[in-house]
Structures are given as structure tokens and as C-alpha cells.
Image (cartoon, rainbow, N blue to C red):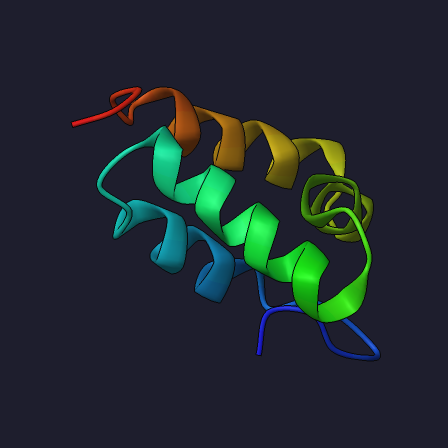
Length: 68
């Protein structure tokens, strides 16, 4: 599980994002997350990470193509 108390499994988050095909997949995840939890995926995720972790995640995201 990505979000859990008392902390977040950052390595699992990185692993999942590395498996995505493109940035469109992130939009699809965000949409499904909102449907299930009525919460913003990006805000929820970024709230769980410190600045170093956010930077690492953004590097992974920036390496993804927009759509393929």
C-alpha cells in the first residue's frame, strides 16, 4: 500500500512510477484515486514525501514520455 500510517513506503512509490508507460498513466491513476477517495492524488502523495523524496519522484516522472 502506498499511503499508510505511520509512514509511506517511498521505495514502493518509486517502483510503481518507474513501471508507468507515460504521464497519461499518472492522470489515470489520479482520476481513479479521486473516484475512490474523493481526494487529490498529487496533493496527497506530495504531502507524504520530503523535499529529497519529491525531487527523486519528479526525476522519475520527468523521464516519462507525455503519451505513447
